[in-house]
Each structure stands twice: as C-alpha cells, then as structure tokens.
Image (cartoon, rainbow, N blue to C red; front, side):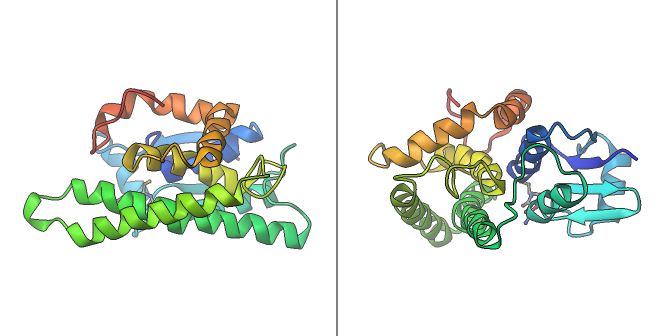
Length: 219
Ligand SMILES: N[C@@H](CCC(=O)N[C@@H](CS)C(=O)NCC(=O)O)C(=O)O
C-alpha cells in the first residue's frame, strides 16, 4: 500500500513532514495540491474539510496534522532515524520543542504573511506588531536554549527539528533573526545543511516568487 501525501512543496508544514519522510527514506506518492488540479483539490477537501495541509492517506486511514503524521510514521513506518525517542521524558522534551516551534515561531510568522495577503483595508496592524514581538521573544528564548545543544532537544535530530527547519527558515525571511542571536542563526544553518530538509527546501525553490513578502535572495 503506497502512502499518499496531499501537500505542496512550498508549504512549511508540508516541509516538516517531508523532512521526516526523507530522514527515513520512506516511500510515498505525492498528491500535489494545486488550484490547477481540481481532482486533487476535491479529494483533499473531502478528506479534510478544514483544508490545512499536509494530509497523509494510508489505505483507509487519513492522518491530519503534521505532528500527528510524523508520530504515525514513527509507529507504522519506522526507519533508521527515530524522530520521537523511546524514553518518555526525552519524548516530552521533543514534543515541547515541537509545540514551541509551531505555536511561537510558525504561528506568528504565518500571521505576518497572511496579513500581507489581505487587501490594505482589512489588515491587522496590531496583530502583526504582536506577532513580530512574539518572534523576537521566541528568538531570544531559543538563543539561550540552544547554547549547548546541537539539535532542538539535545544531541539527536528529532521531530522538533523537522518543525524547526521550515519554521525558522521562513521566520527569518519574515522577521529577520538579529545577528545577536548567534545560537539561533547557527542552528538554522545546521538545519539548512541537514540533507532531508535541504532536499525539501530545494524542491520548493521554484516557488520562491510566490512568497507574499517577497523572497530574499538567499536561503
Ligand atoms: N496545524 C496544522 C497547520 C497546517 C497549515 O497551517 N498548513 C498551511 C500551509 S503551511 C495551509 O494549509 N494553509 C492553507 C490555508 O491557510 O488556506 C499542521 O500542523 O499540519
């Protein structure tokens, strides 16, 4: 049975799951979401009316939410890289860092990008200012957290790093990481060099002109 992934290469949450799939060389079939492909879009809407990507289909099971998809892959399609440690306490730290990157890096980053896509009259200046303030706080906290860590939850690459890679990638494009946060910048560089994420990022390269704030001329 082939796993099917409803996703788009430019989406950060899809890249989070792609990084997990590529870490373990897990085979899957792309169901690329595109407004030009009404068939795939209809399948996606029927599977998940909330219409947030990615969605994984495994036979008669449909799995939504990037974190749950990665945990599902670990349970049902384990590979050489265990993205959620067997030790319960270490797994809690991975889950906490996964939540940190989702709620306090990606969520404010998306707020800024989605606001830029609105007509001028419907923009939310206060919400965007709050999102930028949250990113600053997150960068400052992360800079201290990463002082002695190679990866988000210690010395092993995990699900939290699958989240961190695309979220810090786009967060830096959206609200530049101050050079004072040297640990965050170095961690982002390690993530960009990780072959699994580098592959996902390279597959998304042709879509960079779509970035609503204007993609910078760098990774
Ligand atoms: N909590 C979801 C978030 C997924 C999400 O926000 N995906 C974005 C793409 S990066 C999306 O589907 N956006 C489509 C839209 O907002 O209409 C997850 O972890 O999978």
